[in-house]
Length: 362
Image 1 (tube, rainbow, N blue to C red):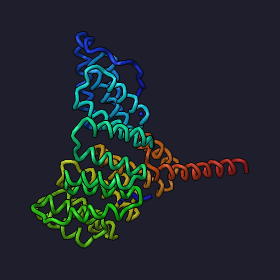
Image 2: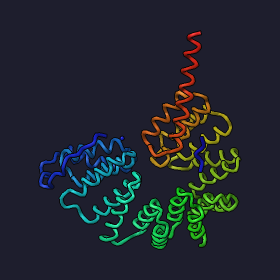
Image 3: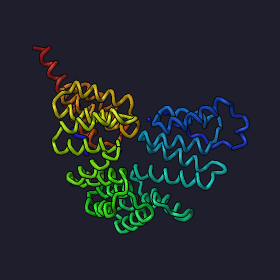
């Protein structure tokens, strides 16, 4: 394996806002804590807290919305859609909140491959709100999933026109890449590179774009300029460039510098684990992964947990690898690579069990 490049369902009707007068201080506290936990990526805890807020009648629309986001992040898309629909059915849903909920519900429908429903929400947004870059991208992504290529292209162009940034270019590129239409996405990367870097962050972003284009020479040059400008993020990116070129020694140096300089060293620990895997030092890889998990945010956690499965497999500890793969898919159920790996690991564990039975019977 290589990775370089759930919550109880509540179907209660919305409570009238007049019931909020009886909300306890504890319930309000749960609601506020839920928002913080959601932001920090503690989705299961946030879900429980939002459910408690819903039961107590605290800000029903917002609480249903928060529970829906938590379910969406947990990969429970059917439950997410139900929560978002419950939120929309609540009394006095403000216009801005409705826009937010419809956008999230469309994203959940998209995950469920219920494209007509997703597009219906996108169209409702287009009819009632001024379109912005995020809505154009969401509509384009939905159209692309429906094989409506011209509509997708038009919306992506509008999205990039509203937000001509490196991040938006990479987002559109990723959407096309998922459909095996890399060439259509590459032109957005090229557009992002058409300007000149004004500061260290620009050099870092340009290096990231070149990295995705597999242009390691230009990526290295841009990232080194970013590092000279004290951009810490560029250290981890340059480490990945070196890894893709098979230079684990220089990669390790970059990742070590990142760990020593970054406020959150999770990316650096993950990179060091990749170096360890490349060098065959699997115990050190597990140690670095463990260090990374202790400080990781939601963005970095998935990669760390993915690589943890890979290490146990390389150690031929298939039982632990199987356990880790099951735990991983509980958090990231859409990962097709780990789904395939889970099937493989089951055969290896089953084979070990059969071998053990055979030895015992001899």
